[in-house]
Image: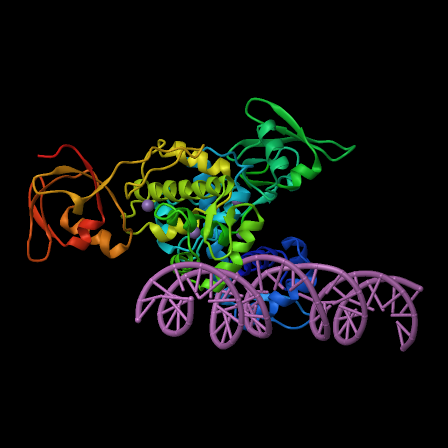
Length: 220
Length: 220
DNA sequence: TTTTATTTTTAGGTAAATCTAAAAATTATT
DNA sequence: AATAATTTTTAGATTTACCTAAAAATAAAA
Ligand SMILES: [Mn+2]
Ligand SMILES: [Mn+2]
Ligand SMILES: [Mn+2]
Ligand SMILES: [Mn+2]
């Protein structure tokens, strides 16, 4: 059984491992809003428990057990987010912090029944896939909106930034999950992207375009 | 802001204060499954924070702030229990431990929306009253079944014991909340009580009868 | 290949929540 | 009222998760 803190470390390492093979001490410290020295302490403990492989000065990787544990926490986090949005009418920018707490509730029964209650959802309110009870989930094939060329179209199926200001901004622009979009222009001057929606046209900065994930349905 | 542990102490003191004015160190220790020495430490901290009044060797009482905090935790605990039973199909004997964790999730928004989602329930699955968001709730007038005389009747509206074995036992006997009952006999030999239900007759021990709460609707 | 910069670890310490063993205060019994 | 029993508190440690400051290792630059 892991502590609340250990679980947060495992989840952080899991997410960082999606970008780099070996996860570095400083990266964990930044993500966890703590100091590298504290990370080193925790890393040793997790290694002793067989949840990560650790070579001094070389960063860490999750073991099979560690990875499974992390995925289980991610599963809980995302299911709770669905609950908050679908059942309690939270907005997609309001759910993260609460889910950050709820994900640590320890009851297999609870999460399985919640999953059923929610209708076994496949994705959370941000488009992130929800692992099933065996930890399996489809690796989603997303393209960053920024990578689309003029004329390309697709559907918004995810975001790679979960901050409230960002999500509120998208909401205001009407760029929510499931929306069909087409890139109508890319401005030479600042690289900002002109998006055609079914009913209107909006302009978004490169920074915003980087964090919108598209499931492409055909190039032009 | 209180820690998880502080919250559990406050809740324990609150419940013990329903029976005695001054709550004693040993009583808290027993309830919290910890040692009196640990309780003394925590008591000092809670007193420093202004959540309890404490005179050495004289036990403690909750301050207004402490009481409000405790009631808020009780509110959360009971709402989560309703959620588990009404929405996730848990049995009334399965919810306590999970609610014990869920009650510590810190989000006012969450609990108010949950309350609404559940239809502002007035009682939890064990018949205990749920405080509203201002901490107010009707003081329920229960009579212990053991106190009824032969011929008295009433409705089962609560239990004063939440252990799984006890609740499963009641379930098996058909003695669940809302059931109409009448005391048809009290055995001389062991004081066990004969209960008439709408469709059958059951015999329960004094020990069981002590923990069933009845809202009386007329004596004979 | 030195030197410099960055990253990571170690050393030593703090605060929260617990413990055991022993001392002190209160309560009950003779 | 004196003694015994019970309750409560103190003293001194331990564990977990942090911290700062300094040392060590690795990576980058000159
Ligand atoms: Mn978390
Ligand atoms: Mn999410
Ligand atoms: Mn609790
Ligand atoms: Mn209850």
